[in-house]
Length: 510
Image (cartoon, rainbow, N blue to C red):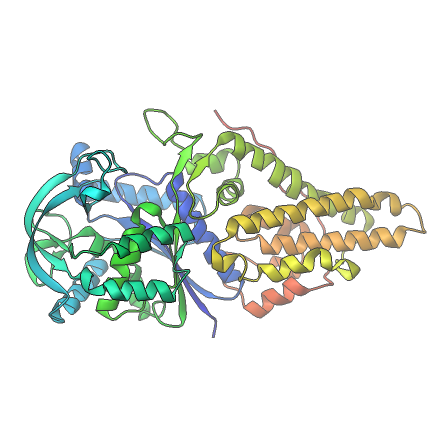
């Protein structure tokens, strides 16, 4: 039986269409889903929209639209964007769906029936509508929410509460026993510091909201969005009998740093209370600025991920976002760095290597590749790749940087070896052939290794090689692990080389 892997993006707030920050998180999840498929896992990949929110209602009212009409428009637009960006999700959930409401009410009732984790009380405090969260004074900067720069409202109402304080010890123990639960380490330290200060019970309902999921034990109250939304990750598993939320599945959440508190404290406690297993890891992305400035319509610097993919290439966009900053750190979308990466790394290094090797091998009729005596040049990278060094620790940036160094070395090798000169002399002809077989082996394996990131480039290489092993590999589909390992480790393979430019320069459309 294939190993199982379940990866999720956050469900994005449905108050607008996805921007480059949302695309960044979705690209990370997509790359993991594709890598795991390539390595033989049975994969589930979910994304969707967080719709049961008072600020959604307010947004629709501002536009003079019915709330569900507005939400349907956002859902339709989001689906088109993810299709254009080739996000290979298997499930798309909207929290207004009946299946989600039914599951949320089932879990609420289950926890309520325990008689100790949900209780009724009165709340008086500060509430940020933008965050959809209550705030303490220590959370504010100069009296305003640091994320939305607005002063929280003072709210006083009767609510139902979840006894998060009961799970203080559980959370501390879980963090100690799972030191990589949150990646990066700096984000995990923030979470642990938050818990060490003492977690407080949180309200799971709203007295005055009218849009959302009613509590099953008190229909006069609407479920708080952060209790409702988190359960989406299991809602999408219901049709399969929760086979992807079991002990045999590796579960990975990808999210932005503004919601890690909910995912790393509320969510584990809710799961423990409801009798469910916890996810294995949570990868936390930072915020993206654009050329050092916060994205803003007034500044005119909003980056449209679809436009970037159309003006350049989807590969270039994914590669740059993963290559430019490590997961967990705040990043900056710099047009100069983007263009530089596209020109130097994808076209200048990788594209140049592929085109030179394929052209020379095609010219001299070389259709077999082997690593022979040059094994050390490549073997360490192959061993490091196999999940441990890169994938399981969220080191996609390090992986792509190491790969780039290898591509540079291969380009230096071909320049110094000058096989086109050696081939003309009978005394050195065989050496030229060996050099090109070695380089062909590297190109073939690097293409396989990076197929989940450079999906368009891989499709071109498939057409170039016309080789049985490469032709049957599609990084968006399942592939048995032994087949991949066989292809990956082959020292001899036959190809039908058809030279084709792998990446071409494009001018940005104005």
